[in-house]
Image 1 (tube, rainbow, N blue to C red):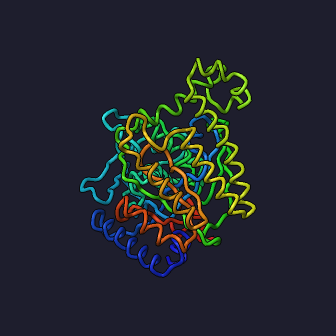
Image 2: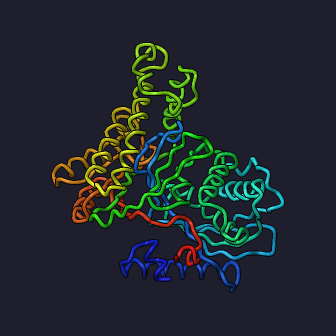
Image 3: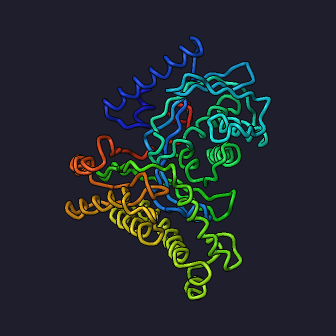
Length: 421
């Protein structure tokens, strides 16, 4: 398995040994709960959003990447027509009867809803389903901004794909199945970016202009080869009461689109906004206009970022990261909460990081994901990672900084011939 672990997590001996111990622990837990039987390993990565902050819900463009933290399962087929999934830290497994696949109201917001929704979508899509037993452990921590839910959704999909569909279902289809389960069964109206990045892996540019048929392009890029690290800083803010803040962004963007008789901003142009800006101020308000201006500029930046990565122009890429961060802060306005001046962890982390970069001379940072609270993203030279961690953790505490790498592979059966090849 060392070759597999090197590909997924990095080639350092200490990293490989850590994963060997982790997989041994997962297998032992599986056998303790389900008996001494052979099991296959499956992995689905977390994801980071690199470009396209709050663009997907208006059918815009995003640049995302799978990262080297993941959800891992030891799983075995079962002759019983049910899925039994036990997650690390839980004493009771989730049990889904595959003879009953309609939504269950009481399950909304639970892992049972996700499992049932994925199995249901497999069946209505004419794919095969069947029972399995699985023990799951994830180091994609909830609240880290790395999309722990998408990793679990895609993980369940790849198990059903491998066990009952000979691994023939494309990654993009598995991503769409996961999104369906989260939207319809779990009850969260998420976009498709998270699941797509986890399913495909590596750096992916996604254009959502055609709903249901996004254009996905994988970009070969090795950040490590440039001597840079990808860092995620957890500022410690809670997402518990941010639903209204999150919902206001797509709502205000779509409100502006409806002024032109359209549903999303992807159907209009920035020129139309400029030509009608006085009427728009009266009709939708200034913040809607600012957020729309962010959308158009961010969409163009995604294309420019992808081109910079394909050319290996890291400095151009970093400049675009900084521009994205500035636009999110000033136009999108998701780096702090209106009416809560006392709690601005994201804005403070960005300010400290910008000061650090100005002092050291290289790097870039931006808000990560939904914003308002939670995490920021920074790209720094490897030699600056230790002093940066020491600086930022004085404010946000130990383990606030996650040092990640872009993972080239998406969700898979670990050790399969497709993967090793």
